[in-house]
Each structure stands twice: as C-alpha cells, then as structure tokens.
Image (tube, rainbow, N blue to C red; front, side, top):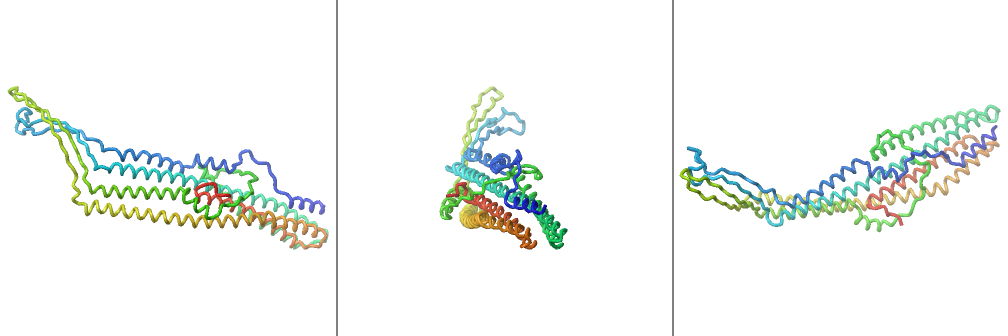
Length: 424
C-alpha cells in the first residue's frame, strides 16, 4: 500500500492539474471586447466628445437677430394715434456683429477643444484595455495559485497518510504525522487568503466590464506563456511622443489656449450692432395721409474699461497658455519615466518566469521525486521531504506570478506608449 501511495505522489508531482474547461470561460480577447462595448466611463467620454463636436459651428455663427416692435411718440393727453405727426408704430430688425475674426477664433478654439476630447477618448480607451488586461492576468494568476494549492493539498494529505502508515508499523515518528498536518493547515490558510484576493480581483474586473461585482468569472485553464522581446527604450520614447493620446490632447489644449489668447486681444476692438426699422404713421383726423418712416441704426461697443477688463482677460489667458505648456512638458517627463520603470519591470519578470520554468521548477520536481524515493527506503527524513514539496509549490506559484506581472507590465506599457506594437 505504501508503494502505491508513493507512485501516486510521483505521478502528481510530474503532471499538471487538468480540468475540462467550462464553455462560458472569459478569454482575454472577449473581456477586452466587452469592456470597450459596455464600460460606462468610456461611453460617457464618447458622448462628451460627440457633444463637443457640435460646439464649433455654434461658436462660429452670428448671434440671433432681434426683431422688435415699438410704439413711438404717443400723446399721453388723449392717446390718439392720429393726433401727432411723429406718432408711429415701428417694427424692425437688428443684428449684433462681432469684430472681424472673433467668430472664427471662437470656432477655432472649440475645434481644438473637440480634438482634445477625441484624444481623451482614445487615452481612456487604452487605459481601460490596460486595466482589463492587468486584472485578467491577476485573476488568472490567482486561479492558477488555487489550482496549485489544490494539487499540493492532495499531496500533503498523501504525505500524512504515508507518515501515519509508517508510524503505525513502527517505522516512522509521530512528529512526522504532526508536521504533515501542520503544513496542510498552513496550506489551507493560504488558500483562504488567495481565494479572498481572487474575489476582490474578480469584483474589479466585473466593474470594468459593467457587470455585477459578484458575478462569477471562469477563466481558461491555459494561457499563452510566451513573453516577446520589447523594442528598445529609445524607440518607445520616440513612438510615445507621437502616439500617446494624452500628449496629443495636451497639444490640442495648447492650441485652444493660444486661440483664446488671440480672441482676448481681439476683444480690445469694438463690436457692432446694425438695425433697420420701419415706422407706420396713421392718417390725420381730416384724412390727410402721412408718409411712413424708415430708420437705420449703427452702434458699437467702446472698451473704455480695457485696463480692468479686456487687459486682465489677456493676462489670464496668457497664464493659462503657459500652464498648458508646462502641463505638456510635465506629462512628457512622466511618460518617459513610466516607460523606463515599466520596461524594467517587464524585463525583470520575463527573466524570472524563464528562470522558474526552464531551471528552478524542473530541478525542484526532480528533488521532490528523489526525496520521495529516498524516504521510501528510510534514507531521507520526513522534514526534508515536506520542505522539498513546499519549496516546489512555492516556486510554481512564483512562476505564475512572474508571468502574470510581466503581462501586466506589458499592458501598462502599451497604454503608456499609446499603441499595442511594443515588441520587436
């Protein structure tokens, strides 16, 4: 019976936990598609952009003309409309006309703001995809960890049975049984903590997908373990300068600030108002006809308070332009720093995952198999056997963690650079 238990453990140590994949598993491409279609934050940003597209035409149009009706020069002693020659019923239309170039600058400012809003949508979309990828890979890592814990729970239970069997026949120690039971309890404690982390990660991913936070997510049992080589940092710097949507949005904001400054300077010039009025007069009481009257009006604003109004507006928009330029410079510095930091994280986790997969884990599995064989013939003590299995289990979890972190770093880098083509 003991030999059969050893054989069973050897098979478990050299095989993976294989399960039939559910039909409703959430693959990464599916999660990305759902997020783009259903995420309310992205939808509201797209609606905001559509709303801002309607502004330039409004800002470039003349103010609505004003139609007026006036009763002029009515005598208050009799209120007789035919008594006085100057009494008239007047109707007219007037139109405000801003100084030449103001409407064009207003429309231009709105156009730049709409373009900035479009880039804001692109930025949010890339950030959303990045967050979905990061949460998906975190959830995948936690799921794999639970699978590994489940496998090791079976192994440790077998260790308990082996230790108990040897103790019962007088070939083992009671402390071996207690040690195996202790390690099994510690494993169950870790399972509880990882299961709680998985639930939190699941809630975060569901939120990004606009689903109920407690909706169960089943992920595929397998995922790509290939980690490609990144382009150089210098190339990513150069590409980010032109492809990062946030930087493009900042540039459009600078253009909008420049247009507002030009418009503020134009406000030192007068605006005009022109009007045309027609006044109808009533015949006299004796039947004499009176000619109707036509009036034309031209007026203009006089910026006599320019020092405290228009000039202050110029100062304001000039400061806002300086602010936008500094914002662009600061964002560019942050982008380069983020590229370097995330680039380093990716390389670190990529190298660690390769080391675990190709070196450490195969060696650890061989060590466990050797320990099991040695323990069977009383050449290895139980403590070293258990420690070797726990070490293997920790290495397997660290491998999936490194793979997950590398993919999360790649997702971050794509959002920072502003494009998905970040590999050689």
